[in-house]
Amino acid sequence: MNKAINSCIVIRAKDGNLSNSKLINMLNRRDFLRTSLVGAAASVVPASLSAKTFNKPLAQQAGEYTAYKIGYQLYGIRQLLSADPDSTMKMVSKCGVEGVEYSGMTSTPAITFRLLQNKYNMVCCGIHYGLLEYEQKGVNPKMEYCYVLGTDDIACHWLENSHRGTLENYLNHAKVFNGIAREFKKNGFNFYYHNHPYEFQEVFNGKYAMDIMLENTDPALVSMEFHFSGLPADLDIIQYIHKLGGRLTKLHFPVVDREGNVILKQEIIDAAKASGSCKWFILEQNFPDQPTCERLLSRSVEVLRDMLNQ
Image 1 (tube, helix red, strand yellow):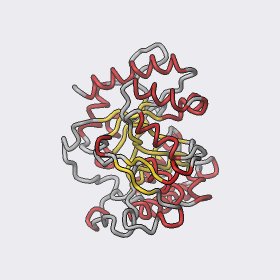
Image 2: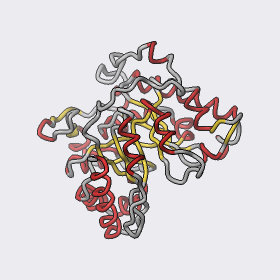
Image 3: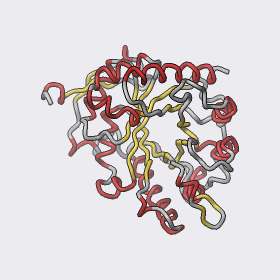
Image 4: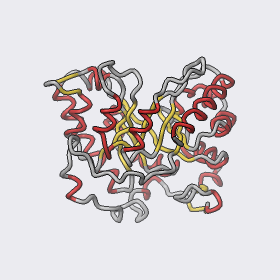
């Protein structure tokens, strides 16, 4: 990478307004976690919040978030992004997406994505890592990467087969997540979990594996990106969103299928809005080529925007 580019980054202000951008010196890896910017001066979690549980979610402030934002999980078009990052990010922005969420792309330098975000007026609304990567590499590289991307939100989105299958595994994951989230919070980052169907297919003592992890993690530290596609037919999605309450910060789903048919109910969007805490509505669809992606993503954004405005 060009040393001049590597030595400074365009960092967007918290409100996302590019007119407020400023140039700051790039922090090197050794000094990053020691700075006051993201160090011990970060907010302390109130003890009263830590006592809450999944069954008694945080008190809601209905209507707190009124400017709902539409994000896009880039994993579904990772081949397009790898082949031509610039035109792909331009296309995503053209479709009306306000934020992008990353997964499985950290072999690309964060500065590459950050410059494209700024160029096409988008923000990063989160990034996903599997539990195995947390075990192997720890939390520091993730915070450094996300600092450059300009996001506070870092997720665990995947459990290997060896991580599943027993109650003990899921109870242990809850302890691990509490530790990860505590370290993130201390450095100014937020931790959230992104589910797949298997957390609802495995049941222990009459409880979903997902419920076990939520009941045993601190609601002040561990929030949720609820991915409701492909879940068991007997799961009431709307009731589950209500159950998540204030721990729901992102809703993740497809809106239209490959023929452009709407596959989302207004009631689901309304339930997420009623939580008072869901800030981002994240689309994910796997597209084979850019023309298909642009056509269907534009349609999805249009339909979702109409639903959010209801």
